Image (cartoon, rainbow, N blue to C red; front, side, top):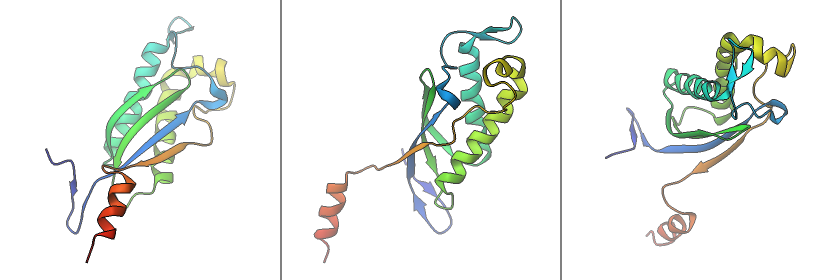
Length: 145
């Protein structure tokens, strides 16, 4: 199966590992979090956040290869386009998922974050992911010509 993205003037396979952390390291992806009973029912909350992240990526033509949460953060392995900037990708994902989660869980999130409409911390982690190691690329370049 060809995993490369085929475009008019390029063929690419750009992937990044992104980690987003909840604001104040709140453990929102663990336990239970139910809006209707004013209890924390995080199983559904966790799945909803993952769905909102997925929908944001689909809208912008980014492809999630793998995504999973821990108690206070989410890991995303994302394939993206060469015209997209990692900072812009992270900003879009954070903005759109925060908006959607506050729309659905406003009452409960007000107890966690008071009046601040936030979900994610200001920073993020991103690391490029290659299909071959740096050593392999170095050897390939050294053996040219």
